Structure formats: structure tokens, C-alpha cells
Amino acid sequence: MRLDDLIERIALDLPIEGAPLAGCDLAGVSLEGGMLVNCDFGGARFRGATLRKLQFAQCNLAETDFTEAMLDGCQFVSSALPRARFGRARLNGVQLGRCNLQQADFGEAVMETCAFADVDLSDARLTGARLATTAIVESVVTRIDLTRAVLRGFTMTKGDLREAGLDGLDVDTMVIMDADLSGRDLRALRLARANLMKAKLAGCNLSGVDLSQGLFMEADLRQADLSGCNLTMALMIGADLTGANLEGADLTSANLSGAKTRGANLNRAILTNAIVEQADCTAARFERARLDFAQFSYATLDAASFTNARFHRTSLHGATTDGTLFTHASGSTLPTDPARAVADLYEPRRVARRA
Image (tube, rainbow, N blue to C red; front, side, top):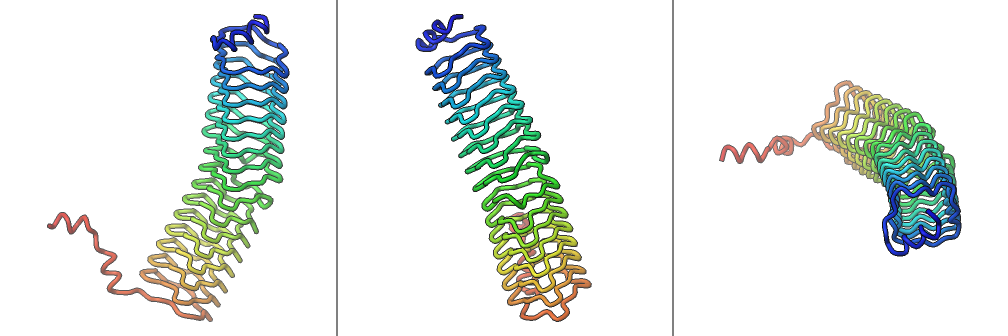
């Protein structure tokens, strides 16, 4: 098919199927509204092109050059784009589903409201890219390079980021659910207001990182280094912090309900107004910690150390304290309230059945 015929058919909104267009030069062209099915664009040049609402289905776009192109509302479905180049391109509302993007280059690209679903981004390069309100879900991201990328309102699910390039990554309001960052040194990241629910962060080094207002529900933080972190108002419900180092961390108004902090180091930590209800704090250390108004209701504090800790109306209602050390601790605690303990046994379902 000649390029003139291609452009004319797209202008007439006619579908194009099976067109052999490998290596064609469409640099600077403006195309809108076409459907391309099973077409071969391998090695084609769309450099500086303007593409609006084009649909590529089952197309070969290997090594295609989209450098500095503008893609608005385009869709790529079940297409092959290995080693495609999107450097400095602008992608707005672009959707990619079930595509091969291995080794694709998005260096310094700008993406807004884009969606990558069930794609392979292995070894893809997003160095210096800016992603706003963009999602990468259920995709392979092995060794993806996000060096110096800027993420705003970014979402990723089930991504294995253990080998990803993350140096200089700038993050604000990010959702990375069920992702794997085990063992990574993440001290250079900005992660305030990040959603890392169910993330695998075992052994991570997050020392001194701003994690304020972060969501870490059911996250795996075993043996993680969170010393000196800002965890104010963080939600860590059900998180596993077994053996974690939180020395000197600020957990003001944080919620650790149901968390596991067995053997964790919380020495000198600030837990003012923190909620640690029903948490397993067996053998945890709270030495010289500030615990004003903290809630330890029904927590397991057996063999924990509160040596030199500072209490002030700290609730230990229903908590177990077998072998717990309170040596030289100061301030006031609230013991188990018998009336409340009886009320806590109240179960509306039982009463309803009896009635």
C-alpha cells in the first residue's frame, strides 16, 4: 500500500488490514481516527507525527520511531512494540493492552492519563519521563528504568521492581499495590502519601525517608530499616514489621492496628496518639519512646521493653504484659477498664439470635 492510499483511507475512517508498511516514513504526518489491523509497521518512522485516536490492533511496530510525536487518545492492542522509541514524545490518554514493549524507550516522554495493562515492559527505559495520572497494571516490569522519572498520581499493581532503576525517582501520590521492592535501598525516594498496600518491602532500607500519610496496610516490612522515618499519620494496619528497625521514627497518629512488631526496635520512637490496638509487640523495644495518648488496647506486649519510656494517659486496656519491662518509665497509663472489657464481649449477633 502506498502512503498516500494509507493517509486517504484513514481520512475516510476506513479500516486497514494487513498492510505491508515496514520501514515507511511518516515523519511529521498528521493522522486521525483510523483503525489498523494486523499491519506491519516494523522500523517505520512517525518522528514528530501527530496521531489522534488511531487504533493499532495486532500490528507489528517493532523498532518503530515515535520520537517527539504527539499521541492523543491512541490505542495499541495485542501489538508488538519491542525497542520502539518514544523519546520526548507526548502521550495523552493513550491505552496499551497486551502489548510487547520490551526495551522500549520512553526517555523524557510526557504521559498524561495513560494506561498500560497486561504489557511487557521488561528492560524498558523511562529515564527522565514525566507520568501524571498514569497506570501500569498487571504488567511485567522487570529491570524497568525509572531513573529521574517524575511520577504524579501514578498507579502500579503487582510489579516486580527488585531490579528496577530508581535513582532520582521523584514521587508524589503514588499507588504501588502488591509490588515487590524487597531488599532495595529506597533512601533517595520521596514517598510521602504513597500507597504501598500489600507491597513486599522486606529488608528495604527506608532510613530517614518521608513516608508521612503513607498506606502500608498488610505490607511486608520484615527486617526493614525505617529508622528516623517520618511515618506521621501512616496507615500500617496489619503490616508485618517483625524485626524492623524503627528507632527514632516519628509515628505520631499512625495506625498500627493488628500489626506484627515482634522483636522490632522502636527505641526513641514517637508514638503520640498512635493506635497499636491488637498488635503483636512481643519482645519489641520501646525504650525512651514517647507514648503520650497511644492506644495499646488488647496488644500483646509480652517481654517488651518500655525502659525509660514516657507515658501520658497511654491505654493498656486488655493488653498482655507478661515479662514486660517498665523500668524507669515515667508518666501515666490507663489500665484495663472492667466495664469496658465486659462491653467488648458484647456481640450483637448473639443477642439477635436470643431475641
